[in-house]
View 1 (cartoon, rainbow, N blue to C red):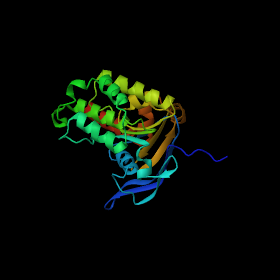
View 2 (cartoon, helix red, strand yellow):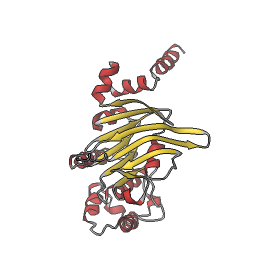
View 3 (tube, rainbow, N blue to C red):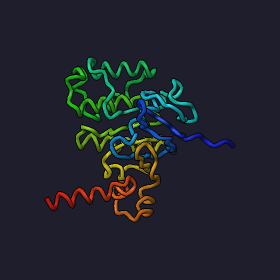
View 4 (cartoon, rainbow, N blue to C red):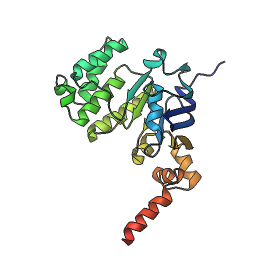
Length: 253
């Protein structure tokens, strides 16, 4: 019997901006029914990796497969929901117009689930307000709903909690738990280690475009004898001593 392909498989991915290497032959897999945290310092290649999955950033070489199908391609787009760090929404539209546009692109006819998401994130009163006029948090809610409205099997989330209030963050976290419990998968990028430690089943830490550590939070903590994921992160990215040096310098100034 052939094995079921993973929701996301990245193999030897190389992404460059001119002469600058952003993603350096990166390889990892996201399993079915898990939240995989892609972590790293600013400029490590996290966003470039996620954008390359959906074709927003071209790859130089390597392969990306979503449920065994080559990505980016039209064949996989309905399997994917995306929230980027800077929400990709059309500011000239209202949320209602934007959701209707996404529904038409996705071939979605039943808007009941969308209505439920709108009510859950308390966006009803802003449905006819131009997106350009919304607060950062409400724009993020629009992006989250647009990513989830077609019930994709794989969610690609880049700093998805940006701007969201506490209640919305809790609702979103519970929706993610429901998603993976039903067999869906999530790849999740964030700078907030406390959040990653609580919601990620496994994490991959990248630095300068390369994978430097991967495993469950417990495995990584045990491997380097660290008390928290934040400590693991600083050790893996070789920033721990730099942090100590900076703090010692400030303390003596």
